[in-house]
Amino acid sequence: MSAISREDVAHLARLAHIEMDDAELEKMTGELSVIVDSIASVSEAAGDDVPATSHPLPLQNVLREDVVGHTLTPEQALSNAPDADEDRFKVPAILDGE
Image (cartoon, rainbow, N blue to C red; front, side):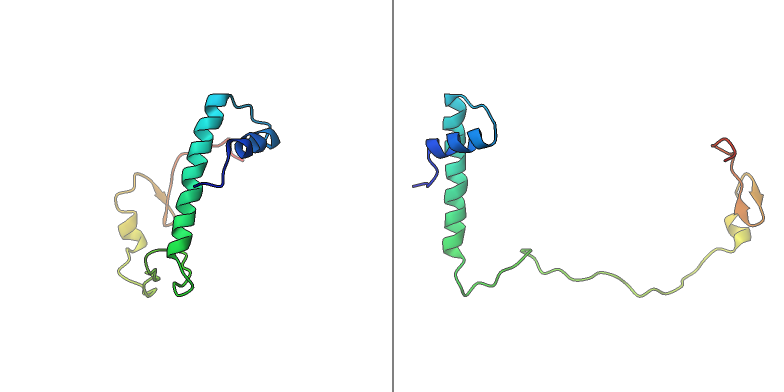
């Protein structure tokens, strides 16, 4: 049995300045009751011997060593560029020269 009553939902709706008709109050009361009952079920299952967790799966860092690998020389990187200047790609300006 849920601790949420229709009057509770109506009171919360008034506090939140939400207009709800009778059908909406009934529907919301039922949905909130399911949520409250589900939370109560989970609370019963998790006893003092169950440690609190923030994630159901163990997480571990997946970073790798920062090692310099094979890199292209500026000449290799610019070999297929349509235009280059001083070891850099040259592209058309997209702003008004500012």
